Structures are given as C-alpha cells and as structure tokens.
Amino acid sequence: MKKLGLALGGGAARGLAHIGVLEVLEREGIAVDMIAGTSIGAAVGALYAQGKSAGRIKELVLDTGWRRLVSLVDLTLPRSGFIEGTRIKNLLKSIMGDIDFSELKIPLACVATDIQSGEEVVISDGPVLEGVRASISIPVIFTAVKWRDRYLVDGELVNPVPVSTVREMGADFVIAVNVIPPMGVRLQPSKESKPPGIFQSMLHSLYIAIYSLVESNLAGADMVIEPKLPHIGYGDFHRGSESIAQGEIAAKALIEQIKQQL
Image 1 (tube, rainbow, N blue to C red):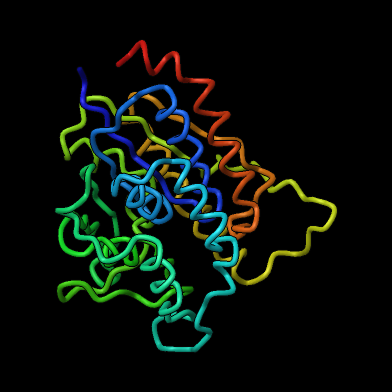
Image 2 (image 1 turned 135 degrees about the horizontal axis):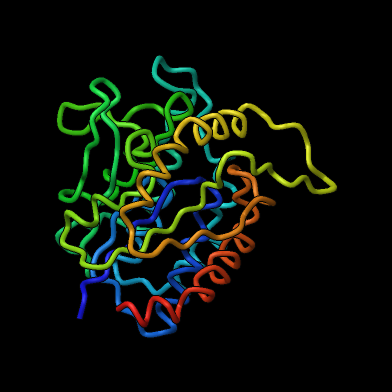
C-alpha cells in the first residue's frame, strides 16, 4: 500500500475547505499517513494529526469562532506587524492545547519562512502551537514569530502548497489541496459586498504575488484537489461552512480516481 501524504496549502478563509476534503477521505476509509501544511493548511493539518475527526474539526472551527478570527486581533502598531497575535495564539491553544509534534498520531510538518534570509523553514518537532503560529503569520499583518533564533512568517512566501515537504517526509502518493485560484479569477461579489478593506487587500496582494509558486508546487503532486471558491473572500471566515462544503464537493469528484491510484 502506498504511503499517502497530504499537502494542505494556504489561502486564509478559503483554506477551511481542507476540512471538507478530510471529511470525504475519512468517510471513504482512506487513511492519511503524513501531512505537510502551510498557513491555514498547517492549522487544519495539526488538528487532524492530533487524531480529531474531520467532523470534530468542523465543529471546532464553526462553534469556537474562527469566523471571528479577524476580530480576535491585538491592533497595536509594533515595528514588525499590525497584529501582535496573542489572542489568536490563545485561540489556537484553546483548540489544540499544548501537544508536542512527537505526540501526534499522524506525522506533521508546518512550513514557515525566515523573514531575514528568505529560507524555507520546516517545523516538525517541539510544541505544535509554535509551528502553526509561525506558519500562519502573514507578513505585515502579523508580527514575526521568534523560533530558535530565527524570525518566522507565513510559509506561503516560499512553499504555498507544500508538496515537496510531504515528499521529503516519505510519501509515495501525494494529494495536494489548493485553494488559491489562477490569475484572472475574480471574487464574485454578493449583494452585500463592500470594497475590500486593508486586511482583504493585503491578502489578495499576497496571493497574486505567490501564484507562480503555487503552479510549480502542484506540478509535483499525484493528485490535485481544487475547491471552487471564487465567491468567498480570503478574509471571509464567517463563511466557513461554505468553504468546507466546496472542499467536500471537490474531493467527491476525484475520490474514485484516488482509490484507483492508491
């Protein structure tokens, strides 16, 4: 049996679609052997690697208030970012606790970026919370995280869908989940849509800049799942249930192919 690795990419609120993908794999009896995650992919991957079911993760995300993520910020103006991140760290801690990487039921790697050298940093030991907090630290919006004499920010800058990372972990078959659409796909406005604020604008700018990296990442995967999310903005955490549903739809469409190849 091939060792199955999941590469869960970044994409802010759109990355909640990863939960829907996990729901389908779980329902179909497809066991995941290892996970590499970037940004929101690291957060969702960490919860699944702990042994939480996809259904339980869905409950945590929708009930605990990730949809209120943007309001759980410390709006100070430190030198390295708008948001100091203590409240978000506390929120993550309330969901995943103080577990160490060595205690996880599924091997996990969180991808971050050294903001001073531009190097990719893969975190797979020590406290899981530190790895996730570093991986989700969007530059300028969040302050950099100090980790072993390095200052780390969001791994999307160097490896937005970490296919190469999960290969290095030993995966024989890699499923990549990408929620960043190709250039030219515009956010579909809703009736109540407003002009993008600073948070949305900065997120969109990030994903425009990194899309060429996404394409090269996906080339190394055996299967790519891409939920259709043009109607959901990167900061729309309040629309988590919609993102999850789209992940489920996209995974269902490819499940027979995945079974055949495994």
